[in-house]
Image (cartoon, rainbow, N blue to C red; front, side, top):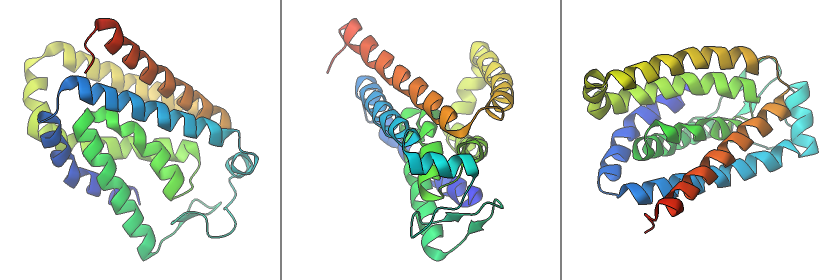
Length: 206
């Protein structure tokens, strides 16, 4: 499932890059901020849902026809054609948004995996790192690598981010699922709110 989602994102990311070049920076930042706030509110609300929290804590398989792909307690996916289609469609949308917003659009990977596959947050985060790498290589091959090679500060930022990801994985493995959901939602909400405040504060409003 991770590979299907990732390959779909790799194919669609260049389209997002082209759309981004045709759109002003202010519009892109506004859209990113609004999308981040909407996703954070939805994830925050779901983390307080009793049934969802019970499934996450116990790593149970959801009962009934919930989700295109069924995630079992053994960590296996009940793979079907609708599941493959849903993963491809989700990956394509995330790829376009990642190319449009920059890799920041990859924050949608975790909620997308949790919705389509109904997998636990920690598994979704681990899968998202692999998917971000795949999509990032696709977009970076077109526009990112030349910039990266010319800008030492960006390379240093990347090295710091890489170290931070490993540290974050260690911390995340020790947190309970619903709490991790709320932490993710809170960080996303603050990021979106801060970006909107920055736009209005600078007076650079559409």
